[in-house]
Image (cartoon, rainbow, N blue to C red):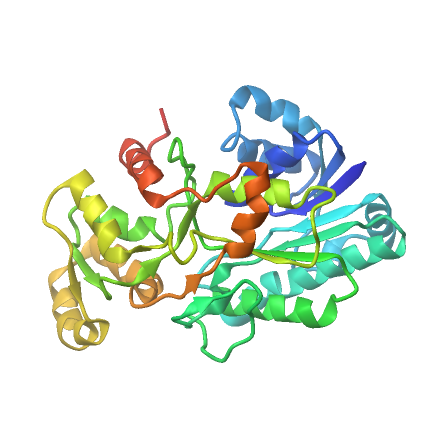
Length: 375
């Protein structure tokens, strides 16, 4: 039987993963790291998170089956006493580390405190569980964007490069994975690298309106129809239910360890920014998007924009542009051959963007990009 320690359960992807883990017959318990003042606060946070991932009638029952572990990624042993640490390690047979600080606007040291140091603590717990005889798996959720500023096709077994990164999030996740490869070879480690995770494929539901949703929002509201980037830039997106389903089946007992899986659309499934802009234009109407070279925009057009646009609109454009425009000027492609082959026996295929993109836009429209509750 399996007793799992999970981090990141209150995050966007983690809540869906937690719900799927609790549905497994072989899972006898789920310990979840939660930042909270006390047990009641931890349970409330978990309930609020699961309400976004499952039917409300199921959420309370699922929460009752979760054992919260109150702690912090940035603290040694997650802030647990030595006794509590060993008790947790003794009962743990499987560690899934999915927690991370995904903000693009953090400084590098802050990102490292969560994403590198937190990974090191998860590895320490896995090693202690291995020493005590019970550990069978250590699954780590990174990001495909450890590829940073690469512009070629990235294989699943590739990692180290000198291309650089777009932001501290990418760099810190890269450093964490490099650290694991060099320091956790004694552990039954498997790495999962999702690309840009969007809402549910069927309903479009999401609580994360960053990344891809920023340009969609300003386009839908008619604030801005100019893409500062290249029309042929590839964009790799995957719905959250696909990511959770893949993590569920590929972390089960008997699945291989030691592999790296790209939970991505793949080289053939990625779409261009121009294609996404056309889909948005067909949905929202108005003027079609136009494309402008980033260097030309920053040199000649940005000063005029700063003079002509004021108030909240200017703040949204400047802040979002600073963090998301780099993804419109060039991205790598992510080969996912290993993942596709591994998922095929489970009946799971990578969904095509054209199959669910309208559902994402429906949800954006119906909730005004998260301002209104879903119907």
